[in-house]
Amino acid sequence: MRVPDTQTAIIITKAGGPGVLVPSRTPVPKPEDGQVLIRVSAAGVNRHDVHQRAAGRQSDGLAIPGLEVCGTVAALGNAVPDITVGARVMALVQGGGYGQYVLANAALVMPAPTSLSDIEAAAIPEAAFTTWWNFFGLMALQKDQFALIHGGTSGVGHIALQALSALGYKILATSGTEEKCAAARGFGADAAFLYSAPDLAAQVMAATGGRGISALVDVSAGAHLAQDLDMMAPDGTIAHLSGGGGAAINVPLSKIMARRIRITGSLLRPLPLERKARIADMIRKEVWPQLGTQIRPAIAHSFDFRDAAKAHSEMEKNTHIGKIMLTISHD
Image (cartoon, rainbow, N blue to C red; front, side):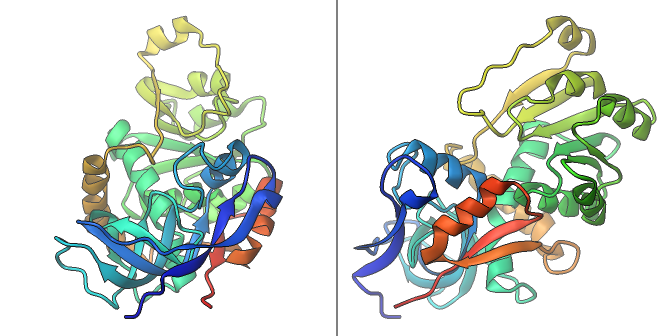
């Protein structure tokens, strides 16, 4: 496959709103040992990308955002077994997904299922890795326990609901509207609640038969912490996925101590490659066989990647259900 020297990619020109995302010509990266160069056909838009853009191009690595892609293998570095040039793949990447070509570590590349379109396949990696790492790597969720995710119709949330319910786990969700609660139940939530409900904790406790939540994923930077602590099971864990721009939370220690509640959190991007590779192995084993049947991304909006600013504006409305995606056209 012929690989050009330069590509069109979306660059974060400075910290700011969606308008700072500008198509530019940049060099096509060269794969090093253990790396795969992917000719990108579709890329996911994630909340991380929005935060990175708002903070500026140097805030988080590459000036080109984008953490998940689908495309065709264009070139291989040394020591890359079991992947061939021309293969259709999906991958978790360390930035660069809003470009026509992107590098991925071979350990984080997997075949794109034939049952999914390129846009659907590109919507899987970030959500699947985030779900598996937090519920199992951090919180060791068991099948006799209840899990809950705030934001059940988000890009991560709706995939997590499908994956965990397909694998036999009991999972609940919260959302911001009754429409989104209904959608969350359609994605596999055993029950879904308005996160603004003043009696949210009581509703969750009733839905779990008084047992409470053992593994809770929070993307709201602790906005519901008081309710969260009241709905947790003994020895339960809360995992935060958003730092809220440096937000601090006030924690009532007596409640944590009485039920031995653990509060933790993680960022997927800086997680060591060795851990990501182990997660990838589990996704291949547990999640990949369900793709296209039990697990199928809901695509809320799709934009040409040159209109990435419009995609970010859409995400910031917080009205979408499912994933916002980019299609990558080639010159």
